[in-house]
Image 1 (cartoon, rainbow, N blue to C red):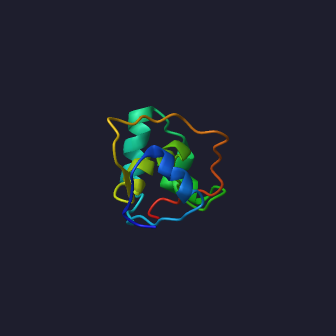
Image 2 (cartoon, helix red, strand yellow):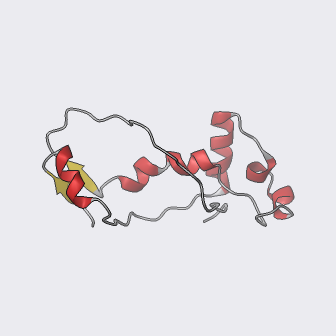
Length: 105
């Protein structure tokens, strides 16, 4: 599924389970550091490459919420919904971060 247009929000139900692939972009250390500065979350596993290299993931990883915040960028251009005046983020149920995103990935 790529560049699909839905004629209404109700039409989204027909696409349940469909897959779409976005453009790739790097989650580099500069992006991770900027997110840490914006949120005040400077945990070493994210912002200290030297210490993180000896940690459980072998290097720094992106914050889970940084990964989540990239959803708008990842979904841009994949689909449009006609007839909307606006849309808002309603929230997520049972969100889990199952795999780390390594700096530079």
